Every structure is written in structure tokens, then in C-alpha cells.
Image (cartoon, rainbow, N blue to C red):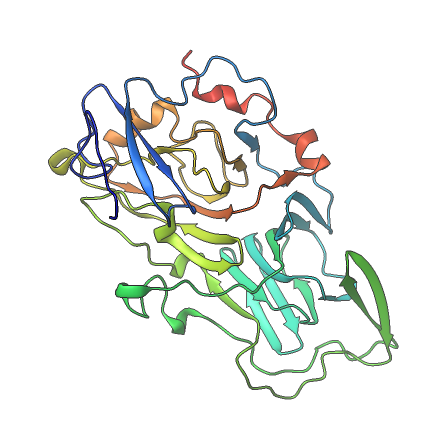
Length: 365
């Protein structure tokens, strides 16, 4: 790397054979895509005894509870590029919907059903990412109660550049499912309403027919779905891959990453760090939605919870994670990460319902 320098105690390879009695910190730019250095501390950079001010790690406990309004999306974090919301639906959409403001990613945390769109229908199950381009008219039909993690984006959700790994890395193109052209199934009503979101306001347009009237389509813009269970992680038994290696979708100023089950690195023979390294990821905020499994790098985090680590303050594994990782040979966790270049602002709902003392969970008892 251009202008690479080193001083004092350091490793030959990042995340490998950390000097005894030291903790490794990654100080990087551009969300793991840019210039980077590794610092070797005698004390963990999360070993604080107090934090005064708003800059601190934050956490929502499992959020699909009685505090979350039903049958509506509740925004929890937002900036000028995206809005992150939750939806707990016990019944199908009352009306059709179209966003003129955002492209939408809907991640199915739990539930089964069908999204009928102007392009046709997509059945959904647990673990599905569903991408809905801006301007797509659709309606959600439930088979079972459905819990959703949603990201609205000012830009399109695009596939990451796979580079030297080739076009079939991360997920094969055959794993992407698109709608088969079909008319809307509801045909017996006297009127059909479409709620259109524009500049944050809703306009309702009424038709005497089902607005899903398309008999066929062609082109390069369409809804599609990808299962998180079809995501193939990039792995190395001799190197702990950074979160950027798990990038699933790319938008302007933020990325979506998928963490899925995988074999853990070889620490016994090669001395590779198994747990995530400490970092402050200075150019990006990090949001992790915990979908399924045993999140061994975090204490007392269950499925449906969410952590928010803003840029500028360190985060990384909890103290018990190092000991817990010794006995593990694989990780069985599934999580969705949103890394944003521009700072996210918690909504009132987030602030009222968060675990206020989450930042203390790194403190030794």
C-alpha cells in the first residue's frame, strides 16, 4: 500500500497472532474500503468507566413487542440517504402502495405471504430480502403474522462489485427471483385505492378496477427477492474478513451486508482472531439487525434486537466473546447490517424504547 509505515509492536498480518497482552484496533476510512491502520493496545479501547454525551453505542431489545405499533411501519433511524423502519403486520395491507420517494428493501424477519406488484407476484418466507424499485405499485398479503425490517433508499439497491472473485461469488444470479407477470387477484371490489408517498405525504388515488393490470413486462428494472440463506460468505481460515466482504447490496452512501453461518477462523494453528476486531469505523455509522442464531460476540442479544454504533466511538466484541469463541468452530448467526456514510438520527420511538445502559455492557463487573 502506498506510504505504508509501521512502528513499535505490531503483527505481520492484521487479525493474526495478536501480541500477547494486547488488543487490536482497526482504524479505517470509507467503511473498510479505504486506507487503514492497526493499533495494538495494552488496554481494550472499549474499557471505559463512564460516557457523558450522546455519542455512545446504542441498542434496541427485541423490538416486535407491544410497544411497536401494529400494521404500520415505524421509523427508528434516518438520515438524508435512507430511513430504517420496523413493521409488525397481523393483517394484509388495506390498500395498494407506491413510493415516489424511495426504493425499498423489505427483509422478512418472520412470516409468510405474498407481495403482489405491478410486475406480478412474489411469495415470501422468513429470511427473504425483497427489493421494490421506486414507483412500483404493490400490496402485501399475509398468510401468517409478518415481522419486517425495512430500508428506504434515495438511490437504487445495486449488486456489489465482485472483482477478482467472479460473477457467481456472494450469490448466484439464479438465486434472484423475479415476479412472473400476473394480474391482481382481487377482482370483486367496486373501488381500489393506491396510497402514493411523495415528499413524505400520502396521496390516495381511487380506481374502479384493480391497479395491477399488467399482462407482461420486459426490461432491466423490476422487483426481485434474495434469501439471506442463499448468501455465500467470503471466508478465510487464516484471516478474519472485514464486514465489507459480506456486502449484499450497495446504495449511494450506504451498504447492506449479510452475516450468515460459516466456519470460524483457525486460531489454534494460525492464531487468527475469531471475533470481530475493535474498530471505530470513523466514516460510517453501523446498524445491526439480529435475525437468527447465537450472537456470540454480543452479551444478552436476542433475535429481533438491533444495535446502533455511531461513527467516532469504538465498538467490538463484548468481554465474554473472546472466551466463548475458543470452544466454537463455526458461527450460526444471521444478521443484516446497514453501514451509512452520513450520520443516522434516532427517532423519538427509538430513543423512548432503547436500552439506556447498553454502553455499560463492555464494562467489567
